[in-house]
Length: 85
Image 1 (cartoon, helix red, strand yellow):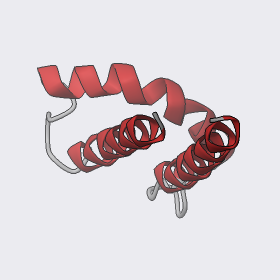
Image 2 (spheres, one colour):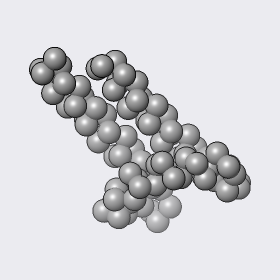
Image 3 (spheres, one colour):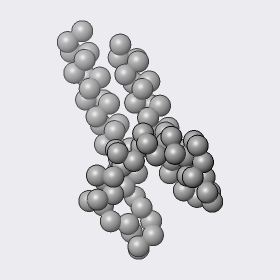
Image 4 (tube, one colour):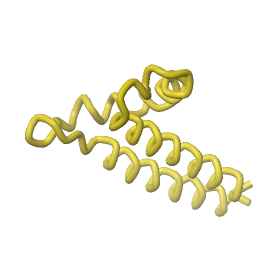
C-alpha cells in the first residue's frame, strides 16, 4: 500500500514537471496533453501561485515550492500509514 501511494505521488510530481516544461514550448499547453495536464495540475498549483509572486516579474518559482510541499505531504502520509499498518 505504501509503495502504491509513493508511486502515485511520484507520477503526480512528473505531471507537474511536464506541465512546467510545456510552458517553454510554443502552443504545447493548448494541445490535448497540455489540456489534460492542466486539469490535473492547475488546481494544485493555483494556491501556490496566489501566494508566491514571480521573481523579477517573469520567473515563477511556485511549482518548485509546490513540488517540495508535495514531497513533504507524501512522506507524512506514508509515515502515518506505516504507523497504522
